[in-house]
Length: 55
Image (cartoon, rainbow, N blue to C red; front, side):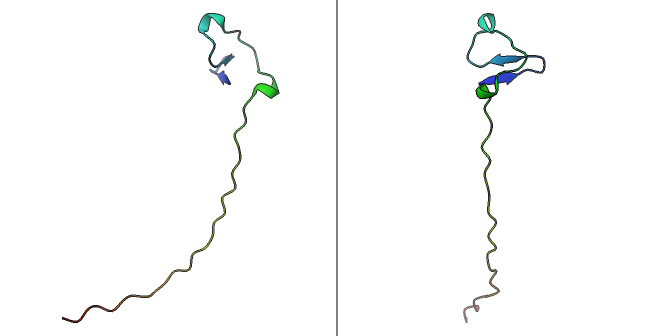
């Protein structure tokens, strides 16, 4: 995976001395996050209050 440190792109897992800095990684090497769809389902609110026990 490629990491951008603010100045250059470096490849993760490669030691500092072996890193070959590039201006930008190729598109097939970039990892894009997955989009997730979250569905909000309304839940009916109950107003039922159980009666208090008699003493």
